[in-house]
Amino acid sequence: MAFCEYQPGLEGVPVAQSSISFVDGKNGILEYRGINIEELAQKSTFIETAYLLIWGKLPTKEELLIFQEEINNHRRIKYHIRDMMKCFPESGHPMDALQTSAAALGLFYSRRALAKDEYIRDAVVRLLAKIPTMVAAFAQMRNGNDPVKPNDNLNYSANFLYMLTEKEPEPLEARIFDVCLMLHAEHTMNASTFSAMVTASTLTDPYAVVASAVGTLAGPLHGGANEEVLSMLEEIGTIENVRPYIEKCIENKQKIMGFGHRVYKVKDPRAKILQQLAERLFELTGHDDYYDIALEVEKVVAEKLGTKGIYANVDFYSGLVYRKLGIKTDLFTPMFAISRVAGWLAHWKEQLAVNRIFRPTQVYIGEHNQPYIPMEERF
Ligand code: SDX
Image 1 (cartoon, rainbow, N blue to C red):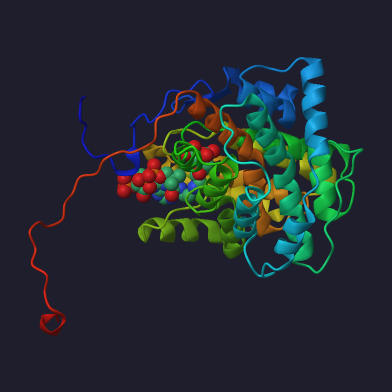
Image 2: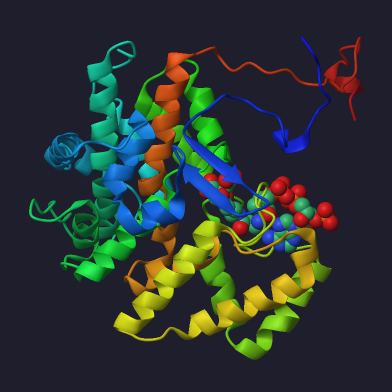
């Protein structure tokens, strides 16, 4: 076995073989199962894309109908889970609420029949169906409202927006949200997916796999950046403040949220599509002044950091879209989770087929043969 040197952040170290997605970071290309993300964003739906990611092929009309129906039939959550969520502090972050609720699903559904196709299908359906319901339920209950029941007449994305706002969205709003879900569904070996795979490799249940991934996604260097972007735009406040703000960040070696990527050295293709979606929403619902600030931030960052390959990533424009859809800032990262569960489950399924427990090594840099010092001699 060839040993390689320690790589901080495992940069460039392959940890799996996968046929789920592909990123060309130099040319800004992303494919799911070989299909370009731009084509999927134009022609597919989130549920069809989830099927593609998890089962490796586009479904036939009948397969898609059955899959959609199965998901619709599992959108409700048990009273026990609802009651448990009612006890969560309303000031708690929705990602913490989601992580806890996702883990709680493992209490109710039979565990670890991982060799059975029906168990895998059942877990996929339950997680895709219930995660949006749990996000919407917490959003309602923290405001003292009862959760809004799923509406059987609405598709996946429209129903989620309905449960969140108690209002049926315009078809274009629902479609734009659905495209957002497609764009965030999968992205090769990112931190939360790796987290999911490490957990999966112990052969624990899929609810624990997803709960660990949700916890990882929440951090500001990963999915949590979309929330931070909006806070940054609010803090900047005006177009004139953009340049001094960015210059100060660079001077203080502070990361500019929504920029930079381990793999992309050009603008993230998902950011391009999200920017177009934001513009379409502005045509429908009116302009957002934060968009002008965002454009200026992008211009100044490109000017100052473009030579280092630092450009807008997926998290830069998503918040502006969600904001226009009436979604609160601290729910932006749960939106990412609702979508990425498809990618996590695809990797879970792929991992199970060739599983070996993850057990890497470390480079020990500590001491050896140290004496035990009695308490009275320590200082
Ligand atoms: C996601 O991996 C995925 O695929 C993730 C994701 C997915 O779909 O799953 O695409 C989703 O997580 C998007 C990223 C969201 N995070 C942010 O927007 C937070 C801000 N960005 C960064 O902190 C950073 O760019 C990362 C975390 C995204 C990438 O980190 P790396 O690869 O470890 O890069 P680094 O921090 O080591 O930076 C390398 C250089 C440094 O400069 P030097 O010390 O070499 O001079 O680039 C600079 C950094 O200072 N840099 C930035 C910067 N990002 C990198 N400088 C200012 N602002 C930034 N945002």
